[in-house]
Image (cartoon, rainbow, N blue to C red; front, side, top):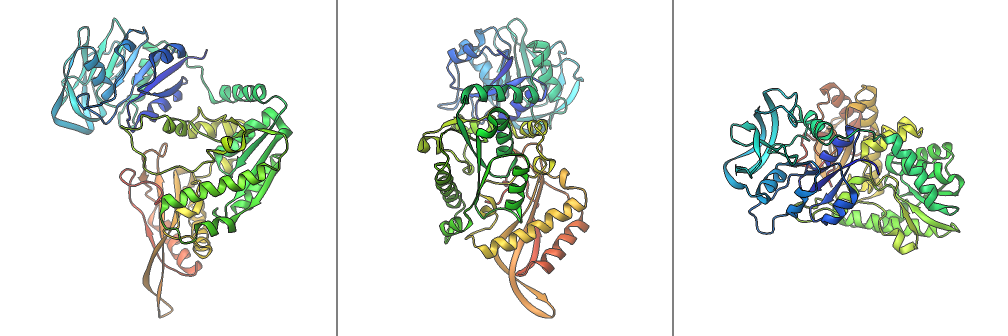
Length: 510
């Protein structure tokens, strides 16, 4: 059994970051909801357990909790923020509501550098996000760091290897957070750090080969990184018995469908291209609500895919590009965290089509998927492409979708991407795209009054898409984009730039 760290989720917006940071250190980690049975934890035999933060207070009615027996399993435990408060509460200490809440940067003073805070300077910057604080520690615990507003900023029980931090070591705002997690994983939990994406790919191929046997496999290709890497992994396992179906929704970027078909056929994939653009536009006619658009696209995708898949005789398996964040969301605490908007995938197909499911990427985060794709020889133009939403340009056309609006958006988007690539900054940006706004503004062209549409430019920098800042694109590049869009895309007379961060905004507009 491979060594792993179990992350128990109490609804923190940073829970996925904890697992990611651990994997970056070469140790496999997985996230489970706080109500995971104790027997299941014992069965998985984790090398250590991390209790995440969360928005609740231990004093809230119905606050998420767990069995105190978890502290008797004999494995190292680290509680982060709410996780530390819950540890204190369950083991007989006292947690109180703080008069001064701490949200944002703070400085801690390190009191003990023997284990968790080994090699950490006496004063270091961290990221706080809490309204409660520890008033009295349980028996056997001592404070190992303090801050101005938190007399107990980090704690430990050396005998039972139980630790806690009031701050979040997993976020980049904590200067030496990765070093602290490394101390916990390697110095305290004694992990070896042997997990890599290459070892993952080799294992996934073997597992698929054993599971599928001599059967045929169907895979839905979108042209994105996730489905592409899924297809290549399955191809290595079953070769000619893989049948890929590319449903062209008519909602892709300029010339994207053609590029997808050419790329994957050049990779030797058995590919069926279904041009269903008109079907999707008919279904979207008159629909303005973004959630309705997403659901319509998802349902129609299933219908089109099902029609084509039923033509493939002897298929018993369906391969999907489900990622670990999707898995986490489907089994999340569903209370402490909230749904912002629905996701678009092909969920539901196996039940309708009586196919068994293969999800080779369900243990990976997005950046890990790219690493696997690189190992398998996926072209860099696919691997390095900015994220693109499943519903495509339908959620970048505000309001009702039409072919005329889509065409304007495609041209503007192509200009934007071309210019940032020409400037050499494409790879510095997490995601860049255009949005077609449902408003018209007055302009002047050739001494004549115009009353035409607006295009918004959106570009963000991010590590993982969970939080994002607007990209500081040089003004001269934005000027080139604006001039070209207004001159080359008929019906556009104004270009604006989105300078919103996530949160409070999302990256996509819908």
